[in-house]
Image (cartoon, rainbow, N blue to C red; front, side):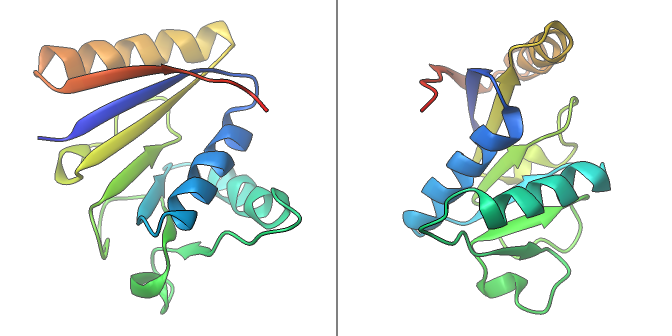
Length: 140
């Protein structure tokens, strides 16, 4: 069964997502970053290029030719994923394919709207019996 980790409360959700992606890549983990919103994925893609000036986070879109060999993938849907290790959700709703992953990461921002949608996702997962861990964010 998928293990779910909530991280709260991020001052900048995409910046914290970059931290998680960088950590996953450094640990040789394989991460899929999901949002059906292309604008969000494009902003996240740009942020990964500038996030850490002294290190590179290898990433690409899931449909790119090198996706199977790239540790961080950006996906707007659940089709054609080359692995199902860790899923990072950047959407306000639960990913419809999350249960195919070993682990799901959810980041909760500090604004009220994001907190409300995170509570709904939390309740959805809890009602279905998923193991959920809640982690406080220490912003650096």
